[in-house]
Amino acid sequence: MYVEPKVVAVAVAGRYAIEDTLGRGGTTTVFLGREAGGRARVAVKVLHPELATAVAKRRFHREVEFLRTLSHPNILPVLLSEEAGPLLYYVTPYAGGGSLAALLAAGGRLPLDQTITIVRDVAAALDHAHAHNVLHRDVKPANILFDAERVMVCDFGIARAIEAAGEESSSGIVVGTPAYMSPEQARGQRPLGPASDIYALGCVAFEMLAGQAAFTGPTVQAIVARQAQQAPPRLSIVRPDLPAHVESAILQALAKEPGDRPSSAGEFARRLAGP
Image 1 (cartoon, rainbow, N blue to C red):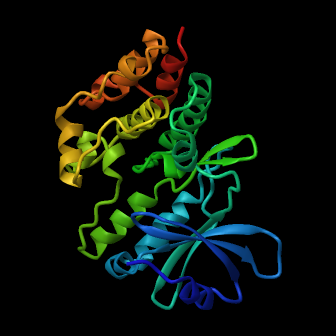
Image 2 (cartoon, rainbow, N blue to C red):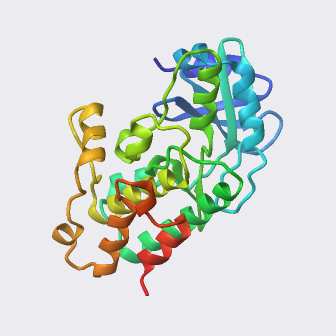
């Protein structure tokens, strides 16, 4: 169930002016807003009503407040989290260059050098967050944004904030996107480690080069089963122009066991770039 723009506009009036709907995802509806009395444009991300009802709001705000301590050039910061009546939302700066998801939808597969650049910047963001004990838990093309010449990763730790707030209210919410979800995350393993985000980044790298996701299926259950049991398709079949080390790096990132993956996101980026 999605939130209507008129409802959001009324709820945040006086603080933000809602200008447009940017998109809808698994957990939020995203609106383009402008700060009242100012020029700054922001993304107002409103949790779907069923989620907002299911989570402990104080815990959600506490988790988001902690995430605000992350500061890195490739991380889109969270500015605040608020409630307005029944709505629970958080706000980030607006990155006007679109998303990797939109880029892939428009043009399919990407050149190797562009893929390496994007993976390098996302890996830098992940390594910084992992050094501060923050996992992303939902690395996917829709959460990789472009702002001028910079690649920025958004929604760091938001999945964890929703899950933790759900645990406190005994809702048992699990957040993630099946096509990019590591086998251990899909089976509900706790705690997760950085290797889970590295797996997701491997899925994103595969999709950038192949023009399609590594694991697909008619249902969520089918995708999760393939993540756990099947090897990804051979990149060398759909992209015979790629150097052998590229496929090798991605296969390692997509290893079923966390301990078999690169030791860090940065290491994966280096292996992808080659010797």
